[in-house]
Each structure stands twice: as C-alpha cells, then as structure tokens.
Length: 519
Image (tube, rainbow, N blue to C red):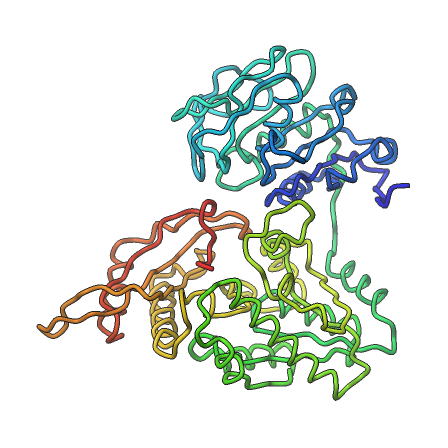
C-alpha cells in the first residue's frame, strides 16, 4: 500500500526523483501554476502509485548518474505504454532516449547558460524565439534520438540534441532545465506541458501556509515536552523560532551561539533583531572552543563536521539543565537537504551542519518545519509572521560562518581580513542601492599571496575574492553584473584599508558548475 495521500480532488502530476538537485524545484514551479504535484523516488515508483494517484502526467527529473552506469536508476518500460504525457528533464531526457532505442554518450560538458536553436515547432515551444538561452548542467548527451521521434531543438554550440518528441505519443525529452530561472522561457515550457499537453486544471492553491505549519508542529510536539532551537539571526532560524513560539509558546528554548566565525558587529545586531521579535535566546560565547578545535584543519568537509559536532555538544549541555527538552528544531531548507545528499539517490555536494553534520549520538528528536521550502518561500512566510522586511531579506549566511569563506587553515589574520572585507562589500552595495537587489555578497580569503606595492615599497599580501551572485532560491545562481565603478570602490577600499591585502578579484562563475560558497 502506498504511503502517499494525494489530494484526489486536484489534477496531479507525478515527478519521479532520480536524485537531481532540482527535483523539488520542478515541483514548486508546477505548483506555482496552481497544479498539484507528488514527488516520488524512482525506487518507490510502481503500479500502485499510478492506481492511487491517477496522475495526469509524469515528469522524470535530473540526477547525478549516467544511464549506462551499473545500477543506474530506471523506470519500468510499461510506463511508456500508459498513454500519459511524459517529460524527461536532463537525466530523464537521456533515460527516455535510451529506453526508446536512442544512444547516449559521454561528451563535452555543458554548464550554465547555453543557447539552443529550435529546429521544429511544437506546442511546448509556443512563445519561444528561434534561439533562446537555457540552463544546462550535464556531461552525457543524447547522441542519437530514438527512431520514432523528431528532434525539436539543438544546442547551438555543440549540436547536441536539446529536445525531442516521440511522434505518436505525448512523450518529450529536454536536455536543459526549464525549472531553473535562468532558462529564459522555462516556466512557459512547463506551463504548455502541464496545461496544454497534460490538460491539467489549475485548481491547486495553498492559502495561509503559516497556519498549516504551526498546526503540524502542535500535532508533533507532545504537551509535556520542550524544543531547543538554535538561532543565528538569519531568516531560516528566525522563522523556525517564530513558528515554534506560536505553536508551543514557553516550551520553546532558544540559543544563540557565538562560534567566533560571525561577521563584524553581528552578535549585537542579531540579539537586537531577535529581541524586537519577542525572542530572547540564551547567549553562549563559545569562540575559543570552536576556534581551538579548528586549528590546523584545512579540509572543508572536516571543518563542517567539527562545527556540527561542537554545536551538538553545546545543545547537550543545555539539555542537561532541562531534561524536558526532547526536541531540536532546525531551520533546514530544501537546498540544504539536497546539497547534503539527504535525499535518496542525490550526490553530496557539501555537508550542512543542520542536515548531515549532526552526530548520531545527539539524543534529541529533530523537527524541521521549513524542510521542503525554498528561501523565497521562507521569506514570504517570514513577512506573514510579522518579520520586518529588512530582516526577511537579509543576505543568507552559512551556519558554519566564515569557516566556509576561509580556504585552508582558519587563522586570526584571515578571519580579520574576511570580516573587514565583507563589511566593505556590504557598505558599498548599500551606498549604491544594490544590497537588496542581489542574492548574496561576501568575500573569500585563502592562502595565496600576490606581490604588490604599498607606500612605494614592495608588499606581499593576501588575495581577496569578492563573490556577488543573483538567484531566486539558491539552487542555481549567476554572478551579478555589478557596475565597474562600484567594484572599483570595493577594490580600492579593501586594498587601502586592509594592510595585508594586495589583490582583489571578482568571481564570475555560475552555480553550477560552482557552488555559491567556496566550501
């Protein structure tokens, strides 16, 4: 018997998850079209799901595997005979081609913004120009389309098949990601597939999501148990704390830990913001214990593991003083879950201390009210809960703090540079009216040095990397085209105000292939 309980009054699209980073983004894009979705892992998909959910269409997600690898995820061949509209995206595109008799090969990787050419018109490309920008992230490609199919689009640079359709069935494959905001007309393609090819009625609309989440928390936490919630001042942990406070009142215990890896002036700012929202956390100064454990550690994953473990030790110390604390609430969002490889079949990109970094010996049950929400949804939820706009749209800051913005060993010298440089970047963006127009802006410091001249003398100093990106949800990101005069001011201030810096660079790599944070 299936574990899913679909909303039977709504038309439903089933999304089969092959472990792709963007699977839930596909789901979200379709729900934005007011059509209900069910995300189902490929290894759980069977005929019972079809009989219970009765989907109007099926979408096959991307994934990290190659279709020709041993134990590569598949779907049964009978799915192709259901007479249902099917859309394969990236890995799903390649899988459909292989199952239908086409050929998939390893080729030149295509990552980021790619231009494709429409060579045959079809309803899914209604409204598209003959050439459009799409977002790619793949190494394999469909070298030969199935015999009973027609190629709809090709990559302009490589000639790879970008889209095909089975001629006698409503089955499509697209190599690019229409769910990603950087595919210029991707939402239009999804809308054509969902509403025209699959003929789904737009009846799905979630109203008052806050009340639903609060109600779920109330039902989950027994009346005699308390919840510990670590707050950092970021929108995710702040909203989590507010949801818990509304759900269980005084049974919420909040903790703010200064691990010595925060930005300049952040402790005072965070405590002030939280107090204005009625949250008065226990403040713990743990700078020395974190930094001492991180000495001589250079590996990114090891840094994350240590920080997660140290947080867990502090949580245990708090619970010893109050044995009624049985739960740990975390502001985990969906990008955290995906990047940590917590979704079955997904590849681990980086461990997040609130997902994959907590040790198994932490004897607390975990509740994550925001686990399947994206950042923009969390921000909308924050505003509905009365969080000021300036706090809701504060730039994301990682839980491990500056530890993931310092490459190599964390030293006091590099911490000081990272703090001062980041403050300069934020100050100049605010002066230019750009701070709230970008997703995230920060600086990175490593071990590399650059020879310079300061005060007519030879100087050897650090290289500071400035990273400013634009994004909608953190799942993908593009580098921000900041005006040159603003970048010049940033560079001049960093090199003149921070003695040990002689070079400033600007990062212009998208996500993917890069991540937003360096490690």
